[in-house]
Image (cartoon, rainbow, N blue to C red; front, side, top):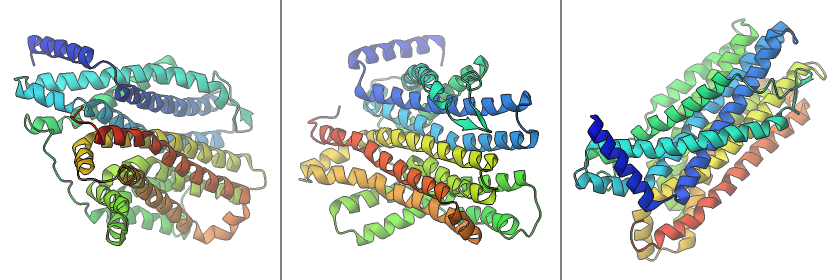
Length: 441
């Protein structure tokens, strides 16, 4: 796209922004980017603190390197949540503008101009979110500094990485927003009427079972049965691979359970929710995926205090780190649930209006929205907890002897689920507003 067309797209975007003004969806999108940025900076701050301690020789070299490795694993478990949250923010930002962008295509705007306007929307809101998220990360850093690891309390200086890491994290969020915006444009790019066209989701392949079974089998042979002697770092890496591999089988598991629920449904809301989950199991799992893998990792980590000696600082650190990972994943999952469901309500605006005109009660539509989150949440998180319990079954009695760690893991898991379901309620008023609107917004 040449400079002239780019300037035209910029002017159209400015006029469109002035005509519509800031919307509630814009604010929610910026909030999503803010939480994604704050979570990313908080995790990087923890990794930086452990690395600083190791470099300065204030901790045992072996334990220090292992803690850094575990911190990087925790960061890897949370990165998919940051990506999914950014995607949901972009979808929410574009949901109320898709029809206008398609109308501009009908009026003669080029594909490049429409793409530029959509990207500018997403990047502008991401930029606001990055700034707010950085301030939020600074605000919570003194609270995080009260947590004790490696027998030492954190300091604010340790938890503040170098400026280039902050800039890199902000750039990563902006690039994520850019990539998600470009991916979201496919509906408009099909034709000028691409927004109105609904393309069905492809079914999930059973290869996901094989992809999950392979690392699971290696874990059982190497770690559970101890058939091959390996060091601690390799075992941790293998556990991390098994946990991340759950993301492959999770959508398939949710889809299978949703089909069973749909066949046995006795209430319209349950049937509607199950059908929506069946149509988009990947999207359903994306909302609960990070929380699921965090719960599974927490299940493994809850075994650490039982394996270590009494009051072993390293085992306590592992359990504390797992609790923090679940807590952060729970917060991100709650924000993601509210944002993603708001975006879905806007995406399904015509469907809600049609159901309202057909006489479907508002409580039914709102209940379906809650169950649309509750079903994958219970299946995804419950399945993750079940797999974790199954894999630590050989050490179950030893694991159960560490009651404090087990209870903490269970309470955090239940709390994360409850907070996520509560956050979904934020989208319920939007259902009524969208369904009763006389014309598309």
